[in-house]
Image 1 (spheres, helix red, strand yellow):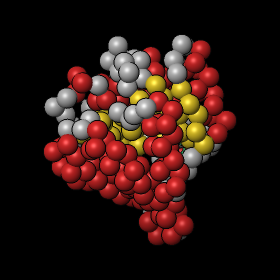
Image 2 (tube, protein in one colour; image 1 turned 120 degrees about the vertical axis):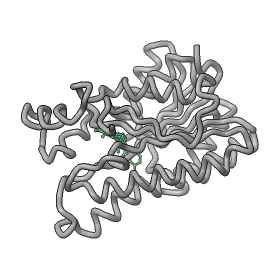
Image 3 (cartoon, protein in one colour; image 1 turned 180 degrees about the vertical axis):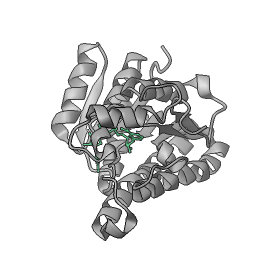
Image 4 (tube, protein in one colour; image 1 turned 135 degrees about the vertical axis):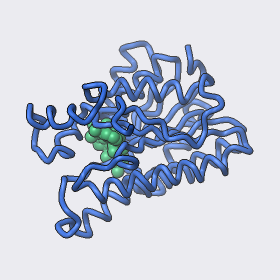
Length: 253
Ligand SMILES: NC(=O)c1ccc[n+]([C@@H]2O[C@H](COP(=O)([O-])OP(=O)(O)OC[C@H]3O[C@@H](n4cnc5c(N)ncnc54)[C@H](O)[C@@H]3O)[C@@H](O)[C@H]2O)c1
């Protein structure tokens, strides 16, 4: 198993990419701290992990709060005795709109969750990993950081910041044997997808419009990202740091 005896925190693990990643990491032997602002959702992921024979702890936490980030790291150390992987995955989408129609509260919300939420996770996890001289800090960015779509400027800016943060943190962490890597998914079939499409629910028109932009002819399943996260968290990716790994079926070509 690729992550045997490792301890991993995944934020936003009550749904979509985070839930699939927590399940995939647990299936590879990691003991999991499953974090979400939605406690019921975090518990549901833990139940699934336990059904599969894995070990996991559900934690209700808001990634925008410093205390919550500090306590998720402390809980991982206290419960499982270490911290090998922190997957800063929680994020919020943007309803498509031109900038003149985007209010400041929307900007503040997106930047606070998608940038400050990652920054705080790094602030509390990387110190521990550097002292241990091992660890992997993963960040869910987006193809929006590389090849944005019209009407998504605020989300694109937040994910661009996440990629820049990845590269900068990778340089800080490298002398300590710690890696920092971003994953850039193209549109992924999770509850968030409808918002990107500007719809209440994903429909045939939205799917056709998005699929037409992906050379491989389909969108991501959450498991496409989960497999990538397992690989990047594992020693198979020992020489990968500071990269932004596109999982995009060719969208960014
Ligand atoms: N779905 C896509 O098309 C897509 C594409 C590229 C990148 N992403 C990114 O992938 C990540 C995961 O998104 P998803 O598609 O799985 O969406 P999702 O809506 O299925 O899951 C997001 C989870 O994050 C949680 N969350 C939101 N704010 C939080 C906070 N402040 N603190 C803790 N948890 C919080 C939610 O409760 C939810 O369970 C996000 O960073 C998103 O920006 C998604």
